[in-house]
Length: 250
Image (cartoon, rainbow, N blue to C red):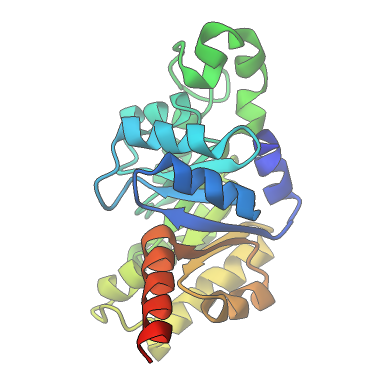
C-alpha cells in the first residue's frame, strides 16, 4: 500500500522505482503493474503540470507510491504536490540545513509544520478528510536532493535535520556545480558523492540516486543506497522501439 512507503523507507527496505516524465496515466498504471515500489514523477524538468501529475497519481492507483520532484521548494509547490495525492516529495537543490527544515515543515500539518489545510484528492475529495489528516504527517515522505557543492559542504548539518527521510544525490547537477558538467565519473565528483555517502550512512540517513540502467545503480545499492530510481519512461519506450526495429532491419 502506498501509504506504507515512508515506513518502508525508514526501515531500510530496498525500494526500486522509475522516473515518469510523460503525461500518460496509462504508463503510470503499467509501471505499477510491472511491480516498481514507487514512481518518481519529475515536476522539476519537462512539461508536467499539476493536472498532469494528478493524472499520473490516479493512474498509479492507491497501491503504488508516487513521489513528486518539485519545481521548487516553495510553499505552493509542496502543498499542491501533496494535495493531488503524492506519497511524498523530493525537494531539489537543497543546500543548507535551514532549507531542509523549511521544506519538511511545509510538508507537515501543525503542530509539526505549516502545511495548509484544503479539501482535495488527497483527502478523498472530502470523503476521507478526517482519516487523511490523522495519518498524513506519519505517512508523508520528505526527501531532499543534494546536488550542489555547497550542499556537500553542509552535509553533516543537513543529515541531522529531524523529519528528513532521505537524501537523494544528484550527480549531474553536482558535477555542473563543480565545473565538470556531465563528468559524473570524474575523481573529484566521485569524491564529493563519497563524502555524502559516508556522512549519511553514519547518521543513519537513507540514501537515494537515479541511474539509467541496472549497471549504473548497482554499485550504489552495494554501498547502502536503498531509494533507487532506474530508467525513465521516454527512454524505456524509445530503447524498446529502437531494439525492435534494429532486429527486423538486421
